[in-house]
Every structure is written in structure tokens, then in C-alpha cells.
Length: 381
Image 1: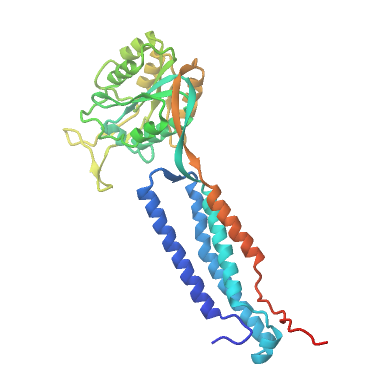
Image 2: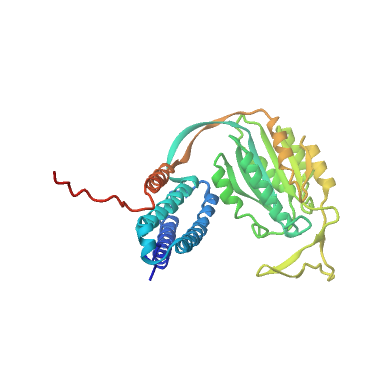
């Protein structure tokens, strides 16, 4: 039981904690429903939602401050003296004011996370080039002389390339002992990201490294009627064992196709790990029982790039070479590659922002003390 004239700290604590638990429960349920049942909803800046974790800290600081106030009031006076001296203490007002402030800031954070719903469709003119990326998915790309592995470094390079393409059309070819079209040439960057996530060293069943077959397939993937400049980027460790890669590059160059190469790996090389459940259980061995060591053949990749009138870039742990190649691609002549319909999400931040501002305004307008003005009873003349 609290001292008259002080805040009912125990009751206020129970109310605040109950409301806080209810708020988090409702928020998690709403989040789950939106994530599973409303695919057209998303947050454009979801990392801003981490700021919501500041709410429990606000609650803790508020309760500590309230306990400190009670302690100060008790030192000032005691019993009925305190009740008469400090008559304006209002428990429900201070609780309501804090809840309005806390949840008002919560809605502002949600608005800053940029909620978006639905889509609008726009007509967009696209100018650029036609580009096909040929990615080596042979077992040698599992080598970890580039961290975390050559394959992962290649995926990161492609992801960075996709982000830097503006209006250009992109296709993806994967190859090992044979080559396959993973993604036909398109302007849809979302589709490119989706297909990129499926690329791995198990994408092609036939092992080997047929760079020539990849170049030839990439060459056939281009639209012969398109006037756009054409380029091929080959991402590989360069260990070509299957065909005439130099001849394929030379033939593509005769059709005006520029070929760039990115070397994945180091000249020192490394063993090829065997993994089970994410753990390395050993290394690949040849027929003689010796550990297989895969090394970057940068000489081969330089010669392929030279035959294709392009450049060779060696990837490292600090740079995957994409920035250098994007600058090379910018030098190619761009033409209008057609119009396409672009779908974008509609911003909905104004709703949580409006609710947040209303709650904050009410919080500022609401005082901590109850109205202690005496009632007017009239005065007899």
C-alpha cells in the first residue's frame, strides 16, 4: 500500500508491464500475419525496426524515475502532511502520458521503416546494353582460397553487378563440364536476384570446366536483331579442361561481342573441401589418393579476354573486380532496348506517422497532476 501523496509504484509497474507485453504480443501476431498472408506488404528499411527494442529500456527508465520521485516525496514529508502538501499527484495521468509517449514513438519508428503495400505500374524507357554472365559452378569453385569460397565470392560479385545495372539487359549462363542457360536475357533485376540465389556447385551435373561451351551458349543467347552493344563476363578460376575457349572467344569477337573475364582464386590455390552438414569432413583426392589442389589459371583468362577485346580482372578478398568491369561496360554504346512495365510498391508510412504524431501530441498536452482547483459553490450576497 502506497503512502498518501506518492505514486502507486507497484500498481503502475503492473499496468505498464501488462500493456508492454500485450503490445509486443499484438505486434508479433500482426508481423506474422503480414509476412505470411499479405505478400504485397513489406518494409523498405526493415533495419529501422531494431529501434523498437528501445521500448523496454524506456519502460525501465520510467519505472526507475518514478521510484526516485517517490523516494524524494517521502523525504519531503510523510503521512497526511505529504497528502496535504502535494495534493496533485495523479497516477492514471502519469501512466497514460507515458503510454502515449512510448507508443507514439513506436509508431514513428514503424513509419521510419517505410512500410509499403500494393504496387503501382509504370512505363519505363530502358537504355543500355545486352550482357550475359557465364558463371563457373564446377567443384573447383568450392575452393576456399577466396573467403568464404570462390563460389560465394562469385555470387557476391554477381549481386553487386545486378545492383549496378540500370537499363541494361542481363542473362545468366552456368557451366561446368557443360553449359546451361540459367536466366534468359531480361531487364527484370528481381528475377536475376532470384535465379542468382539458386546458383551453386551442384547446378550442373556434369563436372569439368567448359569455358568455350559457356561462351558459345552465351553468344547464342543474344538477340540477333537487337542493336544493343553485347558483352560477356566469364567468372571462373580458369582451369579449362574441356574445349577450345580461345577459339570460342575469337568467334564471339568477330560478331562484335566483348568478353571480359574475372579470375576467382589465387595462383597458390587450395584444396577442395568435402562438407557434411556444413562441416568440413575432408578434402577431395585424385585417383592416386593425393589431395586435389585447384589453382587460378590467370594466363588462360588473360588470353580469353585478349581474344574477346576485353579485360581480365583478378578477384581478391577485398575486391571482386565488378567495379572495374562496370566502368568498362559504360564505354559501350547504349541503345534503347525497349520499354517495359515496372512495378513499384506504394509507400504507406503516412499512416503510422500520423498515428504516432497524434499520440505524441496527446502526451504533451496531458499533464502529470490532476485538477486540484476547488469547485465553485457560490457566494450568498
